[in-house]
Length: 402
Image 1 (cartoon, rainbow, N blue to C red):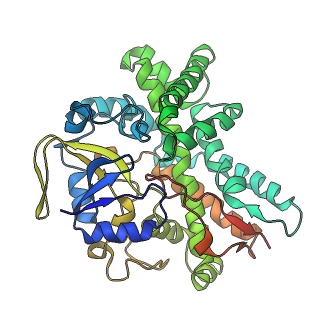
Image 2: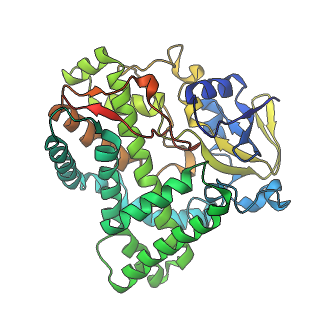
């Protein structure tokens, strides 16, 4: 099996995803830092593996980890071993940790957040409208970032004064370019910041999910301090990064497909279609780290060996022709059906999927209603990916608002 090295600079994610798909449903890959693992790259096999109880989140199953081959200063260590939370456990422990979060993020409860999301969106658009006419705007920094960060922070009870530090630390957390000597301190700083937030909520609880997690632990649900802190970190990280990329990628897709954009703006195609097609075609999450095989597992005509690590390559899955037909490589807002798994599948499916869809469903139509003449300020070919192997993320999105 030929090993495919994932580009730490993410210069050509589409090309890399195509190579992964061509390698078959199970590809042997090398993560930045020289770490070997496997990737599932086809839709059907991914659904199979994501519900296979032999594929677990327990890092102690990983042969390379047991042999001491994964250094503590590996730039991606925070994604491979982020501490005990619903992300890193299975079975009864996973259900126990996930229950409170899932209850807070049901579709019905998320819908109650709509008015607040609409207000935040309007405020962001008002700030954009107040800028000098003709000024180039970084739509990611000025619109796509503040909305999901404010929404998830309000949900979790994180003060806006912590946002600059969170942004700085998460930039390092996700980046493959973080110097190895800075990794241990970055992880410690993240832990300290979220511990401070949890301690503050213990002293002054509010109507937020962090306070609910603390109350549950005190009422006998047996959440440890580590589990609460790591759950908070997980939800904040996943709750804003994915939605930022979804909004940015949808804008780029619409701007580079003007005929489809006009169909949407004319009301001929619903915004829901734009969101689902963006999730499939230019998924916010390129690769998800990391699961481990407790025994040999057959994947198509190949085998994922016992003790080896598996990543899920969502960028490859979204354009799998076996699932999405011969036009899988095309952006098409009229695609039906559109059965992707951009938010995962099985027990670990993203509990925040409904919230992300709602935020994008509010933000995108409001943006185009306010600025229907919006244009990219640079050719799409000049937009630069950030050096993050897990997030399909741009450095910036320069636009002219018109």
